[in-house]
Amino acid sequence: MKSPAAPAAPGATSTATATPDVRPRRRVTGTRKLVAAGFLLPALVLLGALVVYPIGYSVYRSFFDKAGTGFAGLANYIEIFSDDTILTSVKNNAIWVVVAPTVATALGLIFAVLTERVRWGTAFKLIVFMPMAISMLAAGIIFRLVYEQDPERGVANAVWVGVHDTFNESAGFPRARPLPVHPLEAAGGGAYITKEPVAAGRQVQLPLVGVAPAAMPGDAEPARAPATDPARITGTAWLDFTKGGGGKPNTIDARELGLKGIEVEAVKDGKVVATATAAADGSFSLPADKADGALLRLPASNFREPYNGVDWLGPSLVTPAIIGSYVWMWAGFAMVLIAAGLAAVPRELLEAARVDGANEWQVFRKVTVPLLAPVLAVVLVTLMINVLKIFDLVFIIAPGSAQDDANVLALQLYRSSFGTDADLGVGSAIAVLLLLLVIPVMLFNIRRIRRETRR
Image (tube, rainbow, N blue to C red; front, side, top):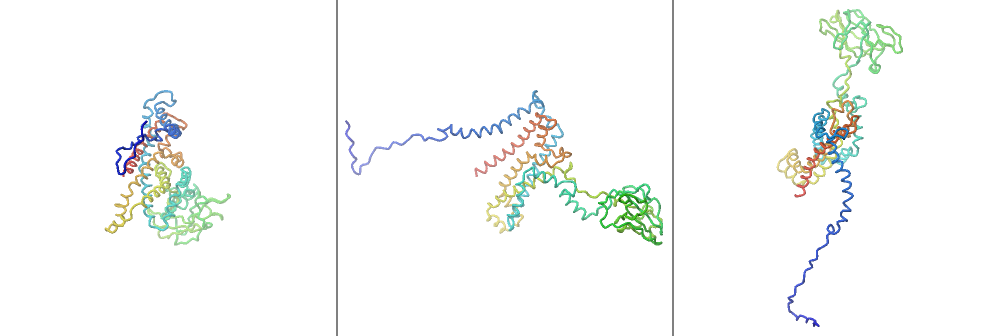
């Protein structure tokens, strides 16, 4: 039987060393793999069902024909780059990627910088950001009405026509014309001229028909023949039409109105020797010493069609018009992100630049923009990914007659897959092409994020 060890003498040093505890620590991921798999499984199932499987099936389906029964090889991909409609969509996508993100980012930068120094900057940012609360569908309907051709319905053309008519006088009587029994005949270029020369002391009649009631001046008065004057050439231009019927051609009836404001020219040997403008009752007069023996002409400027604005949704402007609606929506998004980055810029650097003599433009260009470069890259790349799959605005805003001209890849994918002449092989090939175009932008974004995290 071992005797207990004697206690160490006071002041003695023990030579025994404590044995370290080398038992491995239990890690949650190492010992509870089933728990970790249980948490990851729902996400993996959703990822596989909603992302991986559709991508894999689209790649598989793109190598088969329209019916899906015969192997087509690369025929569907060849058709993408040989069909004019699909090539137009590729070209338009390139325009979208270059123009829309650049303009939206530039506007966001300008708004963020300019609103930083004004008292109502927050309210302005709220107003600019509000379109983000509207869905693409609603924004498309709004701008479909904004770009309406009729100035009475389309805001864009209402403003454009208003500005145009401010500087260019519109015609008074579009589509007005004489009847064969009238003393006027066509003179070419849309003008009308009297069949016989005029003479002093004789009344000249210039009747017309075809003037819509809405086109008549509101202050037009009943037509009246002026008194004859041996020293003047007098006459009347009027609407030779009586509401409700009745009346006689070439005769001024009691209920017929004068063509107020119509221009009358006296022409001799192809030259205009005198001009006059009809009064509210259609009467006019010309000096006899100049107009005697001349032919009276109603110039074409009296009859041209009124300016109807710009065909915003026509073949040449439909894509820029839709890009404008996209910028209206997403400039606020860019502004908010850039404003957040601008708030983190050290003010000492900006003040130091101003102290060194830099003006505001130099401070903005050489200090503010370089410091905001990471934020600008985030906004630009995000918008580029967004416009690569643009669909809603193009589908809703572009009318059927111009949809081919405004076509983009996402819209063509829909048309090829679900249209009247659907070809799922071509549609799948377009989907794969769209994926391949998005991947480089995503890789660039991932590399940029990794570089930022290393700093």
